[in-house]
Amino acid sequence: MLFGQGSKTTVGLDIGASSIKCVKLERRNGTYALLALESRDLPPEAIVSDEIKDRDTVIFNIQSVIDMVDPRTKDVVVSVSGHGVITDKFTLDKKTGPEAEQAILFEAEQRAPYDLDDVTMDYHVLSVDDVNNKMDVLLVAARNDFLKQYLDLLTDANLRPVIVDTDAFAVLNAYEINYDIHPERVTALVNIGYDNTNVVFIKDGIYHSTRDVAAGGRNIFDTIQKEFRLNQELTMKAIKGEMEASIDQDMLKATIVTSAEELISGLEVAFSYFRSLAKVDKIDWVVLSGGGALMPHLPEFLQSKLNIPIEIANPLRNIEYDPDLFTNVQPERIAPLLAVPIGLAARKV
Ligand SMILES: Nc1ncnc2c1ncn2[C@@H]1O[C@H](COP(=O)(O)OP(=O)(O)OP(=O)(O)O)[C@@H](O)[C@H]1O
Ligand SMILES: [Mg+2]
Image 1 (tube, rainbow, N blue to C red):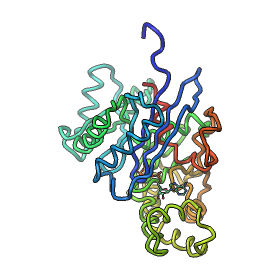
Image 2 (image 1 turned 45 degrees about the horizontal axis):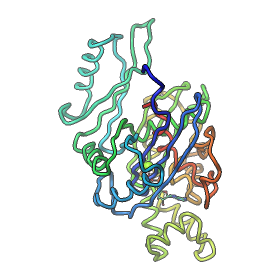
Image 3 (image 1 turned 135 degrees about the horizontal axis):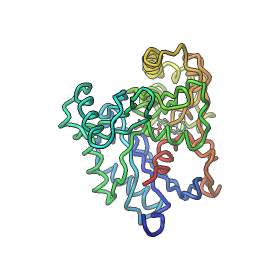
Image 4 (image 1 turned 135 degrees about the vertical axis):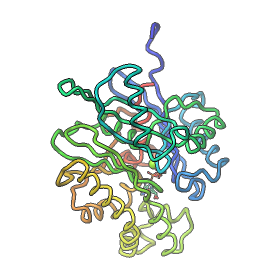
């Protein structure tokens, strides 16, 4: 760019099934400062399994978080995840320019379980091995109908998506700006949401692969609601640990543990698939984010079931912020929820 360095602030918007989260970050000499953050809980039926069921409610809540973060916002970085998105990695003979593009498209066509006309694709050359004349390519494809749902939503909310990322890569980005990646520790970043749990595997100090597990907090939420006969608002309070005096904590723990089975078996499948793909014996470390990281008893239970040490992510670890941004809540109490929006807002636009 000839004049100036462009806008140094970026707004990351995470349209989750449980809540919409939005942050504004400013880039300051290679570090970041959090200028604003805002979130709105959605009714549980507004977005179900990545499908937008109640557009008006979602748009209203998007506009509402944007108005609080910065009403002048037009450009946002957003993400998609779940069954409409496919991420793949492969190795090709080293090529450059249009030749590389052709080879990547050809390979995508061979591998993809979909018609290339029905998807929007993007690729990124992860690494080049000059000795063996090979390159590792990361391919991300999103189904067009799936993508359109989200893009139309943003247009109707008067916003312009300048980058469409995936939840998993946003989680990875948030991790990279806040932590040093351990070169020897095989790590799984696990972002437990409402309908999706994004898993990113790191091996030899670099990204290895990603998988979305179609399970999350919804099942736990629904079971608590039913078992304790609570309305939605009180169920959320119970999950946030705000009803300790009025509900039986042993029963709450038992309910969470039993309703997390589906999530755990999904994670076990993802982990064992990764172990065989990456040819590793074990995963050394799990870094938990998303609302699930804040649910009472869940991290401990995951740790004992998976038999892997778990750390709760703090996506604000390396980020400057004014403590006054967190009026009613301690930052650590909500930081894990911010992995995706922070990772998005930290993208270079
Ligand atoms: N402060 C909190 N304490 C405990 N649990 C919470 C808290 N906030 C959210 N949750 C729970 O975490 C889950 C939602 O997590 P999250 O906000 O990461 O999902 P989402 O991003 O909206 O969903 P998805 O990524 O699947 O679209 C819900 O089950 C919710 O009840
Ligand atoms: Mg999410």
